[in-house]
Length: 202
Image (cartoon, rainbow, N blue to C red; front, side, top):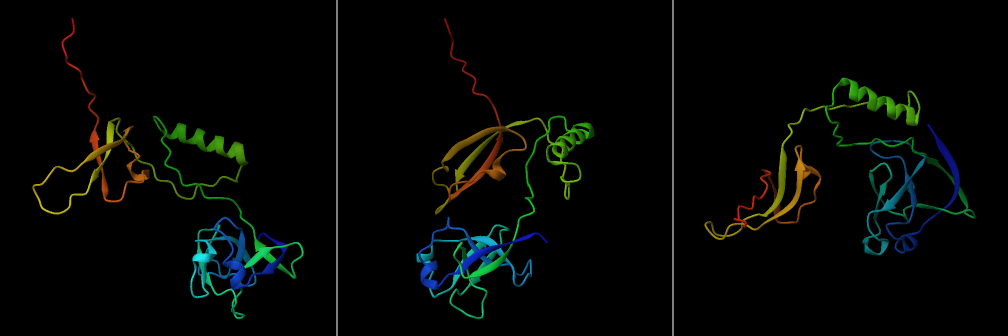
């Protein structure tokens, strides 16, 4: 386990209410996922401290786990801030790296292309460092599509046809899974048909 010891001070509830979501904190690593008592992890508030009520705050760790705690409760690990003049020293769990979750399209992605891709990653980061834990491969057809967002119909049937806005033109598989659609709208994917202008010319 890779940790470092840093000087810190424990924050009171009043001090937490003055912090913003960009302020780096340290919260207990004794969570449902990690279960490491006596150790802390870097975290950020899920919303500005002034917006929390009831003395309880919620922070999200850099490992994407949410922690709720009562800063002033002596029975809890509390929330700490790095401080060179702090009265305590805490042990902080360091990050080993990141798991990269990509939607990566490899043209003509045969075994040779994938082998070359993994070899390049290992060359960049070191042999035996880049590990492939989960791999899902799917052949995709060469089809160009339009991605629209369409208003979800409401009220009586048979009214006006729903409004539609084009968001993107793409090659299948589409980016529809990664586009943030407007509230009250839904994605629509159709085969792309270029507009042909058949106006006679002189």
